[in-house]
Amino acid sequence: MIMVAAMSALVVVASVGLFADGRQLLQESVWAKPLKFGASFVMYGATLAWLIPKLRRARRTMWFVGTVFAVAGLIDVGFIAVQAARGTFSHFNAGTDTFNLIGQRIFSTGVFGLFGASLIVAVMLLFQRVGDAALTWALRAGLGLAVLGMALASFITGWTSLAAPRTVQDAYGSPVTLVGGHGVGAPDGGGMPITNWSTTGGDLRVPHFIGLHSIQVFVLTVLVLTALATRIGRLRHERVRAQLTGVAILGYGALFTITAWQALRGQSLIHPDAATWTALAATAVLTALAALIVTVAHRNEPGRRAETVMPRELALRRKAAHRNGLARGETRAPAGSLDEDSRHSVASAPARSPDLGAR
Image (cartoon, rainbow, N blue to C red; front, top):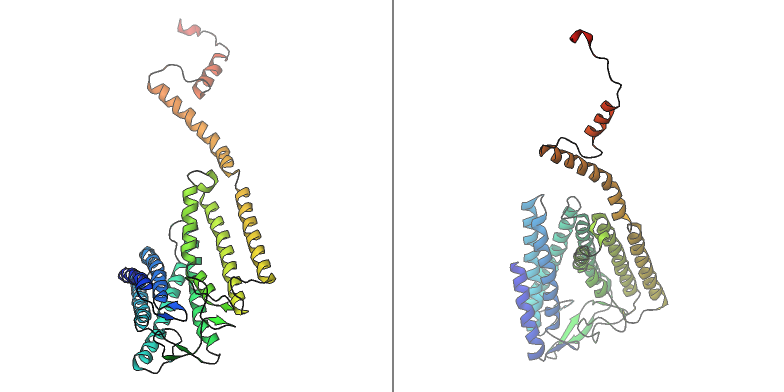
């Protein structure tokens, strides 16, 4: 939470910098990247701060893992903020000044700390349950996709560093050598508003973002289903909510895969070809169909449960009424009870002859 507080402060500072500081890097404000990273770490860090204390096994280890993540996040995003204040690049910067050389080594080490901590938490979630089945699967799948998104971020460096270095200008017009980039088939710069994702080629930041924040999407799905359960009877069953959450996970996972495939083909997010459109349409149809099947399959479940419970409940009510009647000193048992049936049996028995010896 200390890290989350620091990132929240960075979001405020970077937001002010967007308007107060006119310096730019590749046609984007120098404070745009610190703002995006700060906001991302606020969401992801707050999620981990809520989740880790709920893991009952290896509590001390989990506390250590959470601390490693927080420290690595402070170092990495801190370096991004400092480089922004200096008016230069944090990612892919091959500059030879002392501060950048040392900072780049620490920066790359922190990335592995963030990835490793998230991977350990994801593995620990496989062996324990947090909340009901829907929430447990949402957290497991969310952290799993987040780890894949982080791995893709590392793949960005490996994939794009194979391209020839290029020279660009920093915020003061001085030349800076960049080795690698986020784009595939097109250099970084001049992208979409806010995200700055490429509009002319593939951009691996798209699936990276989708994977990293999948855990928030899945948890939000569970919260929505839980809220709707107060109005929709079939959602009150844990199994139904878990299955619908699973459908959302599969659909979102397919979206992550499609955007990664699209980026690796050098295709911009906003200019999909026929193959991408087909994959997206198939995902949408299959996800909707799966959700419909789950809903219809459990449509009559409340009625079936009521039919199972009804005979037992009626029997219990009869027994309770019988006990209450005898407790009030009634000489006649309630209609339909065992005592009344036994009296009918006695009354219908043949009369015995008087005992002559009794005279």
